[in-house]
Image 1 (tube, rainbow, N blue to C red):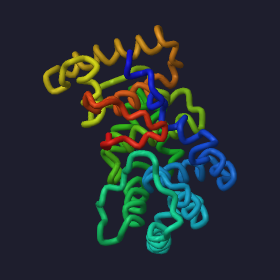
Image 2: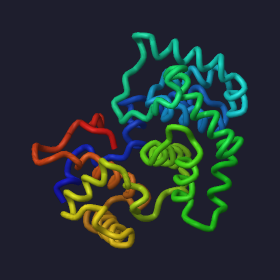
Image 3: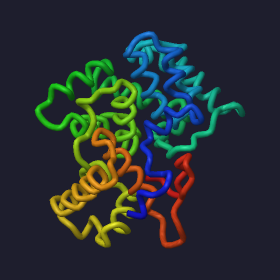
Image 4: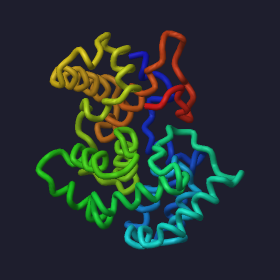
Length: 262
């Protein structure tokens, strides 16, 4: 399939782990002494618009979710100063800052995500992972729903990339999604990609019909293209998202700077 033959068909977690990109993996290894600190650092990486400096600022200020919430005002001020600085690394990935706290700036967006996770989802990231692992249903699907429902500014994309990042970062085989589902690609960008691939709009199909097509795509990727079953969902989501553009051509930027957000 044409849309799987360009650099964009590479998952977000694999992209950020590459030495030539953000060095996120190496940074967390240097700064985080515990797994909970790694989870906190990678959470604010997503919440902060994919900036390593935000990770450094957060882990310098606190090592647990509870400590970060207790120090919100101080950390928020530091983050706002950071975002105003000229030296802040620009994000090459899709933006997540939702403008929920315009009065308090981008630092407020980040801390609103941190605080609402603590208040609405779980008192620690470890407890969140334990809870979704113990659930009877698919852990990735359960986690996606809880993040979307509970965390300010976390929509489909941020929640998906957050779980992908944690699964890859900590090698959590139980968290890897087993098959491509509509809930993983049900936003404007991948929906347009879906229509270009299949010729049908998701809006004109039932949920079951969409899932059947996505499962066929998943099987094709694994069986015909030898995609790794543990990461195929990530690669296919990324490819569908970037395949949203019109007949003018594909965005082949390996830094994933899509023309439109997904």
